Amino acid sequence: MTNSQNLAKEASFYADHVANKATAALRRQAYNDGWPSNLSRNLRISHDGESTFSIEYPDDLKADILDLEMGTTDTTPMSTLHRFMNRFDPYVNNYDAKVATLIDELEIF
Image (tube, rainbow, N blue to C red; front, side):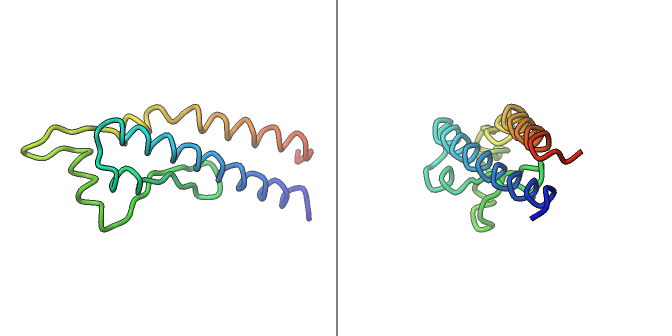
């Protein structure tokens, strides 16, 4: 396996770790914000295999999740997802630092 392949494998592994850690934090925040557990436990942070992370949830829960997030004519918005992503930098910074360390260790450049 080449160093570049090792880097890709390790970076993907660490992105999974970051996504799992962020998923737990997001679910905890949503639940603490008053989201029903059937919605909060279905939130998930995913990654594209590189450094792009996003929030995912099942399509059949989209309307309920967006109603909580954005509010309705009868409810105020909770903005949990927006607040979480606005505070997501530490997760990305940890990922970027790990990949930079891997590049140095594997002597990619």
